[in-house]
Length: 444
Image (tube, rainbow, N blue to C red; front, side, top):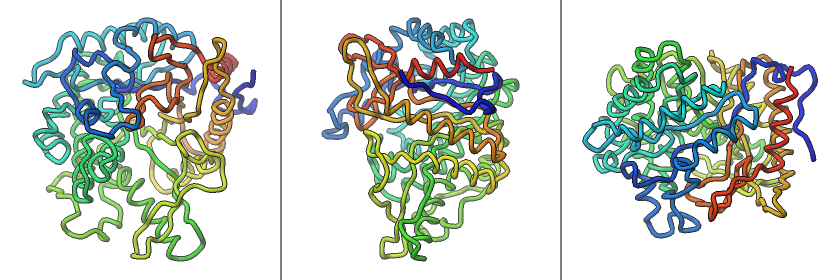
């Protein structure tokens, strides 16, 4: 079996470098009846919203099998587990606490800590309670304040047993895919919607950071952002400018307010009605000090001019692709990390998601997923290259622990280190899981 390896002198082989696996609540938990409905429950009911017409009602039944899953995580030898809390499993519609749901997370955290596993909690991974969406969702400024109240409930319940709290996972996806393009829940469209949702998400982050500082001062607190390194389709000036605009609109729109208290210059290219409503003091709230920023990376993005002075993305060509149709370009990962480090005064970084979907097959009790092993090999080395160029990266989380509900693609794509037979809920470690385990067991 092939291995995942790093150069012998790599700083990523030192014990202080944290390795983990990651999941999210809606994608694995199931137990729909034990929480309030969320926007993804509603979205899954819309015709043709999900590629295979499935939903997350059962998923991997993690709420039922969590003890088995914790044992599996521990067996992998990882240092940390990144999970998300389902807002609607913790809070009832009337604002009261769901004691059973909060108890589930308390038991999960305690079991992980008992096995010496650091717990990285994400407070929001896209599953907004449906009743809040009916009041405007992330287009409603009040949702940011509701998020701060929910954050306080979780932080007080779990405390500093949680090693790290991230407020949001990938606000780009929530805002752009959910409120601007309509590809994700809640399926709204319009540039003004997307920009306003993004602002309220970032405001929610800032408000929640204040709560976390007060409630869990000894935990690491920050946010998780996704990035796709921007490339121009040609050396034409129009395409170069298109790549710059795409980079600002999709990447820097979310990190620049956090670190510099302002939106990128592309804000000025938007029509007045498409610009977010920003109240006095908002940007100062957003720009709270972060103990870390999580970086999620899967692929690059190539842009060209659309003929009207704006940008459009080009269909990938010239590189191997994952089952998602995403280019495999590890050098773009290094480029992203180094350029972010050069552009900003960054806090420490964690690679909070990195991985790939392939068409895995379970044959005679094994899943031989060599392409995924190759992906991890090349991308771990890309992180190593960035560290050697001075980027302060403290850890790496493989996405995902196990196959799960892949949002608008349903169960048609598999990202997991662990294969899930959804009919039986049988978990099988893929060859990539065994290779990842071997890497971790060989550290200094």
